[in-house]
Length: 330
Image 1 (tube, rainbow, N blue to C red):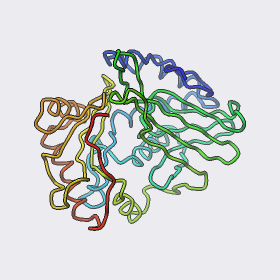
Image 2: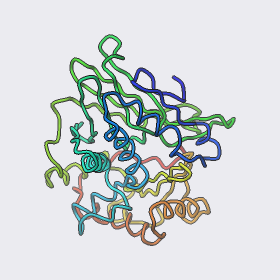
Image 3: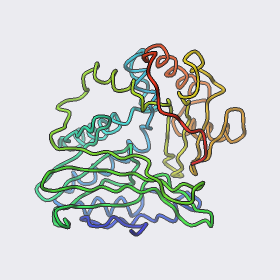
Image 4: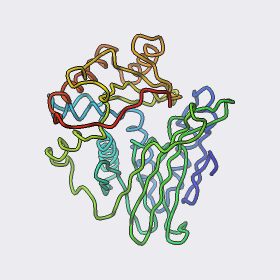
């Protein structure tokens, strides 16, 4: 697969990837956005740019935040939009923006733990899933099917570098089985520590498994966020100007319940996936970058994450065993 293009889709991505992986200072509003807007098949001039703009607005302005659902469904209500939303809520927000701007309504596919906004058409399928950090809307064209399966693969954030400085963008690979309608997504990142790509997230969506309305039932959401896979509370942002990804994380594994709300256990991750532990210069640098990205300050952001952990500690079943969160460089 080329690092610079989607394959087997209706258009070719021409965003200048190496600029992101070098100084990460390229103006992302350049050619890539215009190309995707022009080439999305069977879209009007009004609708096509709206897919791209809605996806970008969520990607850069509505960070992924696993702390947000705890505040919304167990706390005092939804936090400010700038402090992010849960993974499904990012898809909901992208769908809302598209409908607000064009009148076109998304189909919300539900995997059981995640939601993708899709737009089925006669000849193709458009996918918006900001949680998986893909650079542009994905279009899977029926005409590109090979033995009944359409495949798209392309760049996603974070854009990393290898040991020799070579570009190593993250990757999103989608497969769509046309006859059954099953959609599978696989998101991978380059691990500088291991020197290879590793699968980071994967979801399978079936056409009959949809959310008929938004917001979903409150009881369903409350159950889903108290899950063994929920092994941390965090906020993750992509800087609109530089393209750098940073995270503030509080692991929920490896400590007794009474010690979960522990400021000393906070860590950060930078664009390369390197861990910054609380009190270090790396931690302060990454935290400052996140604060600048979301319009916050360190005390607000730390209090926001610790507050979510406090809500988790007060509501999660005592016998819930969560998966281990590994505090190591990616």
